[in-house]
Length: 125
Image 1 (cartoon, rainbow, N blue to C red):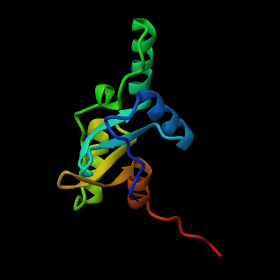
Image 2 (cartoon, one colour; image 1 turned 45 degrees about the horizontal axis):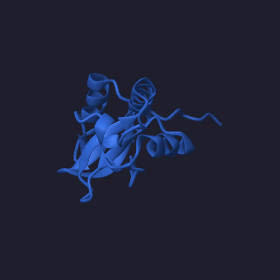
Image 3 (cartoon, rainbow, N blue to C red; image 1 turned 90 degrees about the vertical axis):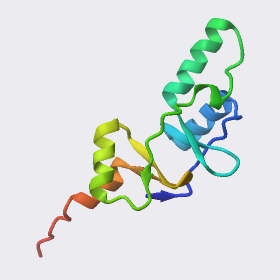
Image 4 (cartoon, rainbow, N blue to C red; image 1 turned 180 degrees about the vertical axis):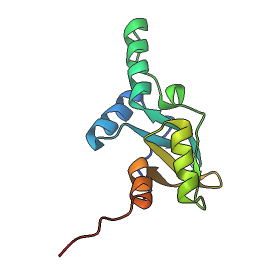
């Protein structure tokens, strides 16, 4: 798990959010409110939709809160590796937010889980 992941605000512009994702080589980021509660996820696909909407309507790109996914599947901080793996398989996500109640505490990747379930290779002398 990556503690204290990069997050976005729902009031951020989509343009700023897209630049931030690109600069960090991220495919998406959690969106949190002023109190640190997880309220959504914003992805590259959301940014593309906003760009197409802006191009079609001739408007600005909008705000993250207008385009983020509000249906968020968080992994409880006390979840087992098996429970986390099942969530990844059920929701087909690359990363899942780790939550303690409503608060975001980290971000878990499929690789994080895979490293836990894959036995280390024995090295031969």
